[in-house]
Image (cartoon, rainbow over all chains, first blue to last red; front, side, top):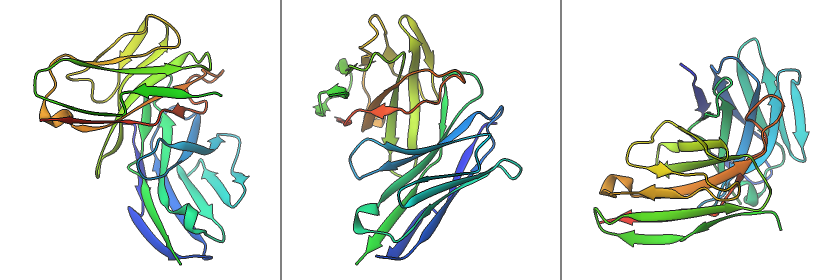
Length: 112
Length: 116
């Protein structure tokens, strides 16, 4: 069964600290994995996409990694800011269909 | 401005009263999809459409209908709403790349539905 599982479920860090969010996926065949940021009450916004040939990709203070062997992706946030407080969602297509598999998300709270 | 619009943004209704939530995108995207989001459950896909007149079920299609008669519009229909359909609904659209679905999805602002 295609699944995307994220950890931790929630995380609290102090402003300026770094953190890493995890995503384990069992989507087959694998084509890509995408990270979204969702502010409370708003629609998700894409942060980055990881394809099979990429193992690291950065978008400002966000760096995503992909390990195709262990089927794990991580999102590393550097020098966190209060505006990073949000839910972070990992998403992958379910094979060659149009279905998308969403992780349950990690809720990050950055405190001053 | 490229965007996905949803209407209404907030809706309170009663059990059994048919309703439609509209979704429109101005990016000429082939792919459109509806999701519901409930606390602790994350986003779950209701229906998706790969192109005009092509729709398919997601993970939680029961109690919902959709249609795709035009490329830009993808309405979500609740024929007989029930309280367990109280949720936050998002519509999204994307292009379809060479690898199939997976291009950036653009989400609408959400519709908060309460069924009494």
